[in-house]
Image 1: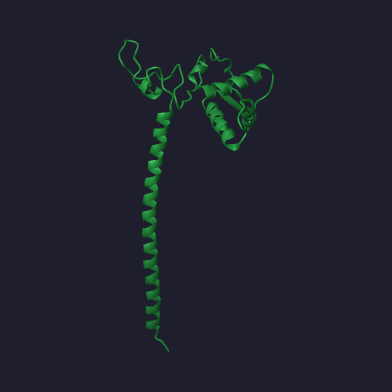
Image 2: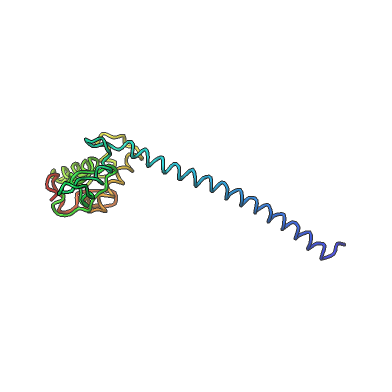
Amino acid sequence: MPSVVGLLEQRELVARRRVDELREEADRVQAELAVAEQDWKEWAIARSRVGEVLAPADETGHGHDQADRTAPAADGQAGEASPTPEAAKTKSQVPVWREGLAWSALSVDYQRILIVLADRVRLGQGPLTCQEMAALFGMDVVPARVEALRSKAKRLVARGWLAEPAPGRFTPARGVSEPGGGS
């Protein structure tokens, strides 16, 4: 019959082997994680670069972001862009709506959403869903397109341009009416 100490030594040896195997596995996973993180960072940089390259250029041939940063100030010297732009920027930032802010502060995609919803109000029709908007815009009513519209509509709600009286149904916010004046 084996001794108790001998049995304990056998179990200790099995446990030590398992610990060594798990450490090797953890090292392998850490190495894979480091490679995956590096790949992810490279893809994020690539996506950013592609966005910069595909951004529409202004008359000077520069992208809007660069042109906005070096826009001439009123005194003719280069200065920072104004906090509330008169024209939309690429990768448009949606400004918070305020009385008198023109729709031209938004990109064309956002203006399109506001126009179709304002027309519905003018005609006495109710709020629209993103699927209905996609169909009105002549888009394929597929999840990717609908979710892109939903994202834009939610951003407009968050900035005060739209209201969401029922989940997933959008209408212009109170006070936001016509494209020209913004109020």
